[in-house]
Image 1 (spheres, rainbow, N blue to C red):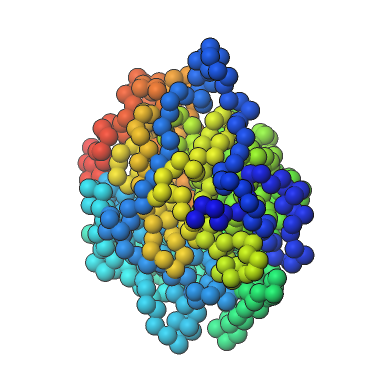
Image 2 (image 1 turned 135 degrees about the vertical axis):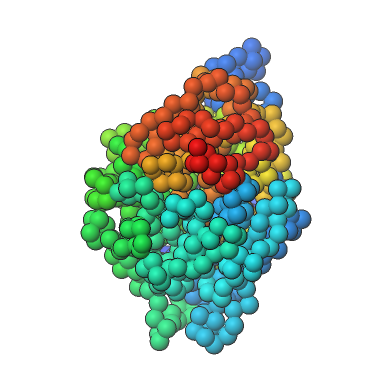
Length: 622
């Protein structure tokens, strides 16, 4: 019920902190009697009435007249997605039970339609061999008509391990998407056999890892044309001494303990050597430690020097930012760049990462979701390998300090020409629902910010439809245009409940352009490439990434909203390593442009058309 929500934007940071308990874990603020949970002031940049309002769109390209409200519908069951997610014991007695899983969009069968892989969990009893795991991972094949079919068994992907995340990438450059699945326990590397089936080769390839590994990301660290693998570690596990249950007391409630007080585990970097992978963490200059709790990873050129860098969101320990100094060699840079901690020097419970270019400098800006009583962080690039953390652009619209944040992303949901921001939330303590007086909810509202300027946002959740605006407890979010209608949709991992599919039903007023990249001398997925689209006097920047957030995989194609602009002037691709390729316009909007390294534009697809593996093979044969 809407009247049961917590007070949001009307609380200042100081007022909120004044209400926090002295407990070591952050807690939320008491409920407040307000007429609506959406109370907020009009943006300071709102146009005046009359002639000034009429002129506003021409002066500010972010403000467009009569633009439709963002709207989503929940269609998982209707679409054939019937996976019931599991993450440990329902009561969440241990930290592992609270992590949940990610969502992975990739084209497993090469027909051009994005399929959905859902890593599923288990229970500690099953991991210890005392019970059977009643769930498994799921692979849903996109049938191309808005529905999916369960092909898990046919593809050979049903397993009984506790899976956490998945990252898709063509590590062997054979034209098929392979799949790395992180687990509580040994991980999987599923090699795509090219016939709709997979074979686990993790042990043979040397990437089984172990412990609790939430995140994985693909990227070519040494520019040799194949994909290397970074895996984040969260907790060490000893079967002979499992973590104790309900080991912490908070506000007279018995809750799980962690991450502080539990032993973490170091991340690992695996170099692709063709026939196998070699673990090169220390050799590459990475200083990962057992005291750190790693989550989401981004492998991307963070400072514009054409070398792939590493960023890892860590829980309650400083984030990792490794700057690549030469191929395959990194140096810790988080302290000097400002990305390790917030502007007050505080470690936060960093979970999800959204990456975009808000200030149009072609350098990534980062939004990071955190725990309750902590602001989410917005790191804006300043150039010279520096970022400034300032939560105000979102906090003054609607505070995130009452939420525990996870999956997040910058995507242009209404195709008005700029990227909006969404963050999904959910507490880790089910016990908060029974607390009296009740100060916070286990299931929480999502946050949806519509972007009104380079770093200006407004609250859009109230108009996003009943499929979006419901209290839930979510973790991973995967963003993809699965129905090929030109706007991004969202797959969500819902804790201990059915998976969700939020179809974007926003009224189609804006134009779009989609860009699909095919690597030749660089890795075939072209992970690490930067795409710049120029249209209507504006510049739109996207990166092709080997993982999304929170521990999820997004649509690998770049989707750009163009607003009222119907023609694209130019597309510039900066391939991994720095080689640049330009496709000159005019290019009609509402198409997918396929660009192959060294050959420019090789395909132009209408809305609803897809590029298949067979088409790529035909190109390669020429």
